[in-house]
Length: 174
Image 1: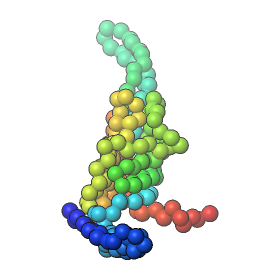
Image 2: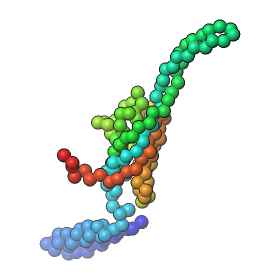
Image 3: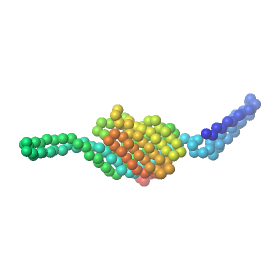
Image 4: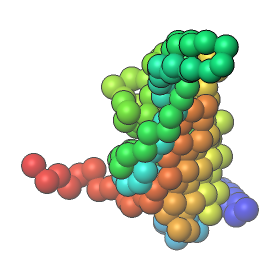
């Protein structure tokens, strides 16, 4: 941890404002030269990968045996996998994640315009961790590796694995 202390001793009067202005400019210069861990992290990411979601499936079966014949329907699940793009935005110790509709469970809430707020965000030089709330039972965990660019999201009945790249929100294609 780096700690900067600036002591200002000045005479009261007209020169005091100039001394404080000089000290303020010096503090800004020192922060600009400080390691990135001292400054607030600002990340906008676009992550390409594969999403997987468990979906319910109804099946019909009939059985013939020595005791007779029977038929019926039963419920099962299947894993559906597809290529997806996820957005992530980290600002200091807060963040949010953009989850595509195909990875959302039937009962979900809390998102705004497709974005969910990350809770308990933990930022380090090597990664970002947090989770978001889809419903009272599903709080997917998000882990982003800042070294490799990999992202993983694991929740109840859903997962995503991919690779992130910095997105320049000022540069637009259209």
